[in-house]
Image (cartoon, rainbow, N blue to C red; front, side, top):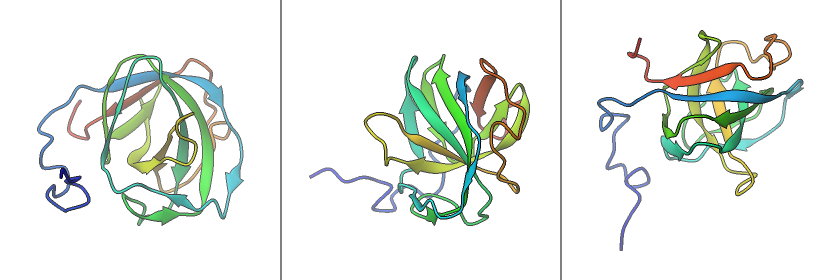
Length: 148
């Protein structure tokens, strides 16, 4: 019977990922607001595949311990992104909007699947899309930290 290598600890961190192409999308919705007791349950898997045209929600958390398998409570709502390129999202990816880094990917919450996935970004300040002054159609990029 096959087993998930993330659940059986066969994969340690991101050591399997030598390189990957950046994944891009555009903001289709800008959100406002914060929740202090959201209770997002981040799945243990460190990677997710997205395809062109998929739409997923972006949330920001300021919990320094946020990561796969953890529960995070305080969130800021950022927006929804429609992916314009397919690829692999990876915990640790640098997340940029308009080429400005807004945080790093810390995990995924599947509460709303199959409608959409919550893609959770960590930053020292959890600010909403409205607070960040984001604009519709702004380009969002997910890239490995060492990619220029």
